[in-house]
Image 1 (tube, rainbow, N blue to C red):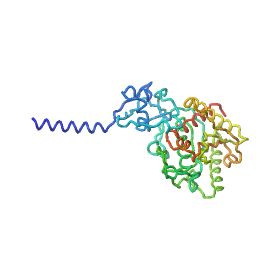
Image 2 (cartoon, one colour):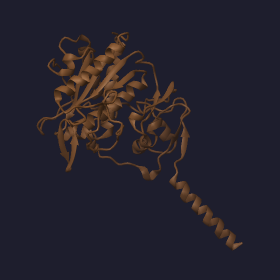
Image 3 (cartoon, one colour):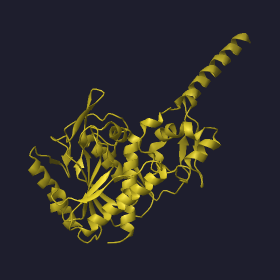
Image 4 (cartoon, rainbow, N blue to C red):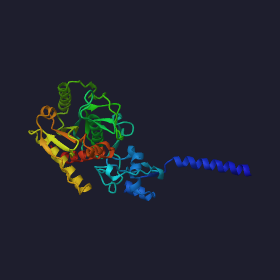
Amino acid sequence: MTKKFFLLLFIFAGYCLQAQDKHMEVMAIQGDGIYSLLRNSGLDPKKYLQPFIELNKENLSSENGLFIGKIYKLPNPEEQVEKADEDVVMPDSIDLKTVKASKVLEKRNYDIFGKDYQTVYIESRDLEGAVFYLISGHGGPDPGAVETYNGTLITEDEYAYDVTLRLARKLISQGALVYLITRDENDGIRDEKILPVDYDERLYPDKKIPRSQVYRLRQRIAVVNELYKKYSYKPYQRIIETHVDSRSKGENIDVFFYYHENSTYGKRLADNMQTTFKEKYARYQPNRKYYGTIEPRSSLYSLKYSQAPAVYIEIGNLKNTRDQRRILEWENRDAIAAWLADGIIRDYKEGV
């Protein structure tokens, strides 16, 4: 009896150790949000919000909302993440208390977004009929602006590309047709702070990017203009080009926008994006005014020679310490993409 007792005790103890390595799971029902789901499971939302998102990002909406009927993993207490407030310059793009579980209209897979983000849930048809050409600045032999962070090289093209991928995913989730003009089949959306530098980006569909800046610009806009002709029956086509600026280390800048002076729709889109950013800052950072500007910049090649209305965006100064925090934290890159998407939806609703 004694041997059997100890054997059973040993088996039970082993089972408990295995169980501790697993995550409890819960199904989202109508009316659930991440906050309520965590609270109802006995977990403090403020402490376990980020671990929950990390565990379940494949099954969350573009605004980190839940889907009815989906099974979600709950963080274990040891997975609590403590994060200093000063590390985050731009807060999450939405109030998770108000995002309720929604139905999935459709599910698609895109390898270009990487294994953690390849599944895209179509949440609405708000952008159905719209076509977007997303250009991530530089790439291939040209890394764009460069800087070092804690002794490691960081480059403009890697961070602009990550924001562009996140924006593409959010636009697709709202029913849009999206073309990624600058592409890197190996990278995908990355949540790391330091994004390793490479030079293997290609141009849609699989063109080598030339070393000459003039040839690069011509090649890029020629590809977009050909696609624009292909979809001439689509009245709403827009180009979004994303960059990271490079200025003196002491100059902190907000996200700002350029458009061609003769493009009515380009200016309108830039206006709607800026308005959205103003509203977001007023909501999430009421003690900090947003200073992002809109200016005509007709000499920029992509604005001058593109046939579709275009907006050229600078998301920050790569050399400025405060802007680096905005750019290097993945939550902030995701927020930038979400706010840009909200501005685009606002513009699309105004019609052509």
